Length: 65
Image (cartoon, rainbow, N blue to C red; front, side, top):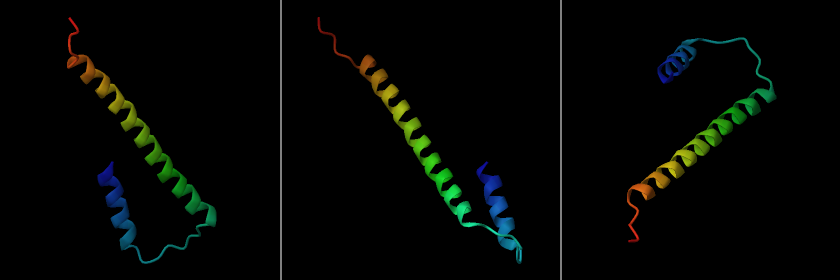
């Protein structure tokens, strides 16, 4: 996935000009997508970090007897 994004970016950099119009809303959509990805990544990391902590507590729990 990352390789294809880098290849597409490289090919776009090689073009002379593109006669296209990007309206002001386009940048906000791109920004929202990036921030949404960061939020989802943070939530996923937090979820699995908490599961790992619970697992480690079960493994290293001291016996009270």
